Length: 230
Ligand SMILES: [Mg+2]
Ligand SMILES: [Zn+2]
Image (cartoon, rainbow, N blue to C red; front, side, top):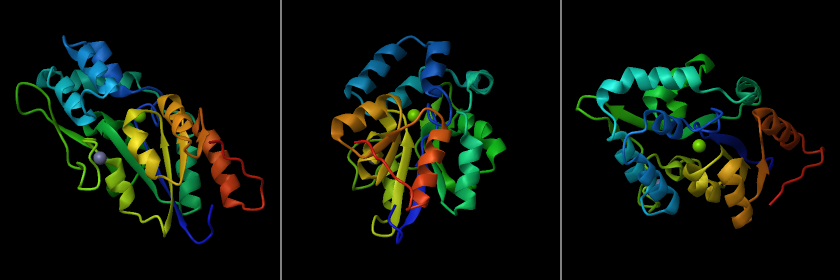
């Protein structure tokens, strides 16, 4: 890690901080007719993430808000080492940002025990005023991103210029693909690891956050050997 740059971490939520993807789990459990096709369209690229996620939640009645929230709280597990990673980042004064394509109504209750500064959490929101759930997008793509992300991770990352920051992204899947191209170092699992290998992006594969911690400690100690797979 360059000594003259401030390290900074951008961490995905669904399937990264949590063991599995909560949007996928919600759609599998409540299974509104038509959601499977939308999932396929997002994966194939026929629909943007913003369009597809918006359409999937619009299949669910707003009256399910409490049921969905409880379902996620009861079933989502936190990946081991998360609290320890936050502690390490605090000790080493590495800013830690949650950059999530998930939705606040299930994300915030799950993150509540971890005491993460409100301004360091970027995610989407939901409006339950109408008959069906409407996803709200407070952080859409700007003129630099044509991906129609919904919550645009590249826009958040670009706030921290590459000449001053060593930008690390932790993620697992499709919402991380664009941000991973900008990051100086990627921690990847699942689909994101496959994509990093395909694109030759510098990355470390992880299973738990203890794997991430080991690498961060190595990077913070320039005397120690360092290995980056790409
Ligand atoms: Mg994810
Ligand atoms: Zn974008």
